[in-house]
Image 1: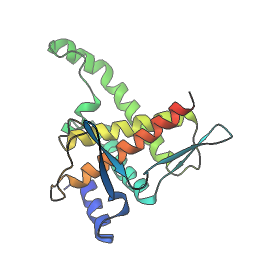
Image 2: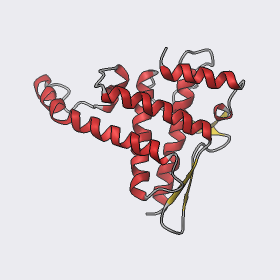
Image 3: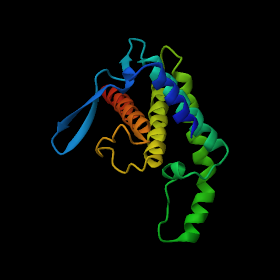
Length: 193
């Protein structure tokens, strides 16, 4: 059992259904979208040109747990399946060129991913962040989402809800929450363009 699942079980044991798991689906045309009863990440542009990020303690804890686990996998250069989307291929039909490409870019991507995760974790305790930090938070959320999507074999973000009995249900919920957080960051950045 992964660290994430163990810690989620502890969270679930504390209350029957944590508030961050309360959600409803609204069908908007072709693609169902998950809408949380309360937004998991509120971002406010301040008069000083900074961004104030508000999240609940449980969401910060979950982001911290997932970030730490992914950070450790990246740092140890684990070749886990859930990391494959973080290192996209450059050449699909040329194995030798792909090997050269990966050897050239892999370490750079690892460093970039780790930096984004560290900025995300540090920002969770800051009252306000700069635009550049918010952009790194966006990258980190995307990195976490890609990793979780691969881990639970999710190929489309609009895939139907997993059954609560599914062993990946908690990870799927977190995937959806991170998707909403990512949307909040994108919306906030777009408003300032």
